[in-house]
Each structure stands twice: as C-alpha cells, then as structure tokens.
Image 1 (tube, rainbow, N blue to C red):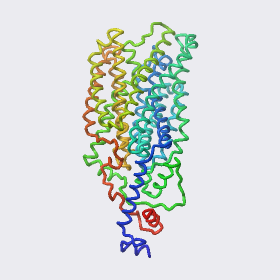
Image 2 (cartoon, helix red, strand yellow):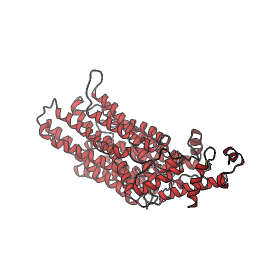
Image 3 (cartoon, helix red, strand yellow):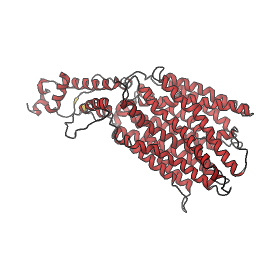
Image 4 (cartoon, rainbow, N blue to C red):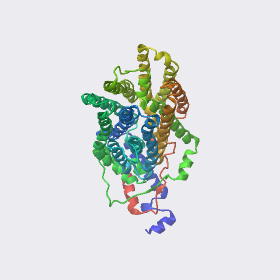
Length: 552
C-alpha cells in the first residue's frame, strides 16, 4: 500500500485505523507505567537512593560548613578576629543566591534536554567550586572574602541543580507505594551532611589544638589551614558519586512523555527493573507518538487552570516560608548559640580561640544529632502511611508554637544556665519538626504533583522560591540581629519566624495529598487518550512492532 494513499484515506497497514493505533500506543504506555509503579523494590532503587543521596549529603555539607568556617575566617581575615557584617553575609548568602539560579536553570534543562544528560554536570560544578574555595587566596586586586563569595556562588549553582534533578529522578523511578520513603531517604542525606560538617570541624579543631596553642594571637596561622580542610573535604563524596551519576539511565517517563518514544521506554523499563542497566540501540527505529508537548503556550495553559496553578503556588510559598526559618537558623546557629551564652569560652587569648571553636562545633553537633537527623527519619516512617499534607500541616503548626515560645519567652529562657538548657531543648525540637514536617514534604510534593513535561521545571521554581526565602532570611538576620546591641534582636527574629510558619499552614491547604497515587493521577490530566497516534506519516515498519506487542 502506498504511504501517501494510506495517509489520505485514514487507513493504516494491516487494516488498522488511526484511532486503533492510538489506542494500542496508549495502552502500551499505560502498561509500561504500571510496570514501574508496581515493581518490586530492588537493588536498582537502592542505587538510585544512594547516588541521589550522596549529592544532597555534599550539598548540605558545603552549605552548612560555612556556618563554622565563617568563625574561623574571622580569626584569620577579620578585623578584631571577626568578619564584619557584610563579609559574614557575603560568604553565607552567596551559596543560596547561586542555588536559586541553579534550581531554575537545571530544572528547566532537565525537562528540555533530559534528566540523564544533566545529571552529573551539577556535581562537577560543586566539586570544582568546593575545591577552588579551599585553594582561595588574597591578591592585590581582590581579597580572599571576595574570591570565596564568587566560588561559593558557583558552588551554589551546582547545588541548585541537584534539587530538581535528584527529586525527579527518584520519583520517576520509584514505585507508587514506596515513592515517599525513597524520596525522603534521598533528602535525609542532607541531615547527615549537616552533622558530618560539624563532626569534621570538631575533629579538625581537636587535631590542630597542639599547633594552635603555639600560634601567637596576632597570626593564628593554623586556623587558616583548618577552614580550608573543612571546606575542601566536602568535594570527596561528590568525586566518589560522579561516575554513578554519569551512568544512571534516563527515566522511562522522560523517554516516553517528553521524547515521546514509547517503544524505547518500554525496553528501558524491562532492562532497568531486571538488570539495573539500559541499552540504547543506535540503529533502532524511533517511534515518536503524538502527545501533549511542552511549550510556552502549553505551560501557561496548564498552570492558568486554578486546579494546577494553586498547587504550584502552594509548593512555592510553603518552601519560601519554611526556608525563612530553616536557613535563618541553620546558617546562624553559631551566632544564636553565642547569643544565649552556650559554651562561652572561659579562657582568653589562644586558648579562648580553641575553646570557642570547639564549643561552636559541639553546639552544631548537638543540634544536628538531637533534631535534624531524627526528624528526617520520623518523616521516612510516616510519609507513605500518614501522608505528605498532614505531616506538613502538623510541622508548620508546631513550629509556629515553638518559635513563638522561644521568641516571646527569650529573656526568661536565657536568664540562667538552667533556663538556657531549656532553650536548647526547644531549639532542637524546632529542628526536629522542621524535618518531621515541611522541610521534607516541600521537597517531596513538587517532585510528584506535576506532569512529566513540567515536573522538573515546577520543582525548580518551588525550590528557587525556597532559596529566595533563605536569602531574605539571611540578609534580614544579618541586618537586624544587632539592632539595640550585639545579638539583641534575636528574640524578635524568632517571633518573625513564627509568623512565617503560620502563613505556611495556609499555603499547605492548597496542596493535594499525593500518597499512594501514581504520578499520572496526581497530574490532573486525563490519561485516557493521552497518546493520539504516531507523529508524522504512518509507516508499516513503525506500526508492526506495536501491533505485535499488543497481540502478545
């Protein structure tokens, strides 16, 4: 039969009509998606979790190590052994600014170019930026703080890329019943990165104690080595994970719904679920299908519907509100610990320097071990049974009360050593309910709630909104903390955090519950007739394999 003639009369090889072929392709797509959603948990899922999780471990290490390193930098490069407000703000806010850029850029690129093609690129940026920070030095034209700000911005771009890529890859490979736990396990590596940064800092400080005590107060040369080691070691896990990121397969959902190659996606699913590997035959016939395609017009058409737009608004604002407090505390915990008099060094001179650095490290270890890490795993236990939305509502509600208590009761809670212990307990509870609450769910929900063609872009927008909150919090904290005296405004900052937690409750009400639902169900798109046919003119070589598969 002549191809042109077939096209003109609407018939296909083997007597199939256009609607019949579209139906067959649509059924094949749904069967392939069901294979992924109902697969047995396997070593491949563990591999995805570990490869994605190492990235978040590195991200958190790099982000929160500066909390301790900035104190060390002050002893070496600051006037009066302390960075001024602008210098401290610069080294702390540079990474969130870069992260915001990276989340938007890589989120979009992952939907356009592919998850696999971009995965690993962001890790290379992180490794390069982290290593460069450890080698940074002064020059005639620019000071070391300026150099560090630039490299921390570049590192932040890589860190930002990790958010949408790791979230989307883990969600698109996960089964429906374990998707929440898999994504939470990936994100929980952030807590271990935070903890490890404090632990490594403590080990470095302890190891350098004998040499540090030989320094003169005017030089403190060994503190310069300490912060470089602390920052530089952050690239080690990234180097280890790089190979595995570069060799991870493309997600079948991207292949099927964005590249519109159902045949290749079906083959990939069979290989990945059985062997954990994928094979691409360069000579294989490519079968493109007609399906909804990403475009500017389609993007606005999809999100202009309130049922879809409200979800993006909810995920973006919830992340913004959460990060106001999460990074406001996380990047300034050393300042808060000093403000409440935790571990005030009893000695003067060099011994006082050692005692202060040790206390900062111990304080961060306590906050991480007592609050951050347990919170992630509480979410891990309940996220697929209780659900994402209830956990987020509960977290925002409790955080509202905790921050209000710490803020309005600040003077009494810091009046005596015994009361300070109570403040630290409340602070640890705040860390716990950030992670057994919105810090985890604001990462998980955007990785599930949008169609494949916009999933990474929408996650990037949501995550970038969070980083905007982190930037606002960090700039605001730096500018307000010393109003009325050194660290005198801390109590009012905590009250402001409480207000934003309260607003997070409202944005959470806009979100759907995504537990135990397939990604396609959550997308608010009709899956019946999602594929309309074969793209371009019909071809017997393309149709026959589809019909053969259907006959099986």
